[in-house]
Length: 207
Image 1 (spheres, one colour):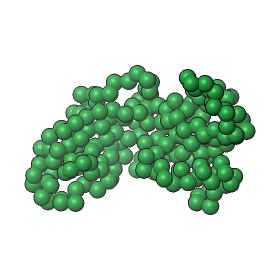
Image 2 (tube, rainbow, N blue to C red):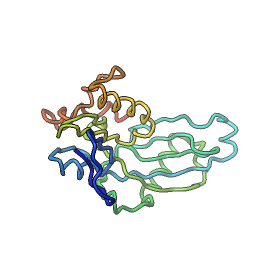
Image 3 (cartoon, rainbow, N blue to C red):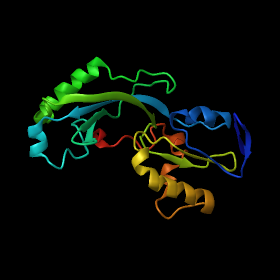
Image 4 (cartoon, one colour):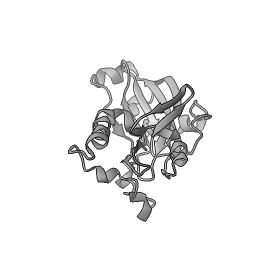
């Protein structure tokens, strides 16, 4: 067991594949099919007007817009981050447009004006795009489907960063102890997609 790198071979007893949207290609090299779709997600940073900041001094809570295709959360300073979620725009993680589409910005304006009128006059402070590694049910894959000593931690569907500490603990437990008492790790098994390609299914109402 080991990993081939540009600097040579690194021998090891165990390997954890946690390569985000590049995981399927690496998994294919060892004969494992991981149903991850890289999706392009669009992010806009809003600078709220002064009266909004005064009215909501603790800022906007992390929440989902109606329908679940947009979410908001506080950003640095008084800014508000608004981003797409649960979209299905497949993309190449090595080659994608990193600026939000004009149509997305126009849709955002309508959604914010209708649901959070206090942000209707907010300025666009920044914008960018990123890539999710999305599973069919938006749940993680944490498993050791083979070969022996090869583990996978992937498919975080936009939730990986905030769950990182827990995922790190789970993966450590599975690799070292063979199981974990933190969660029922079978919930994240890769074979859930064998009987049903939808896995656990999407959350109700996309929220």
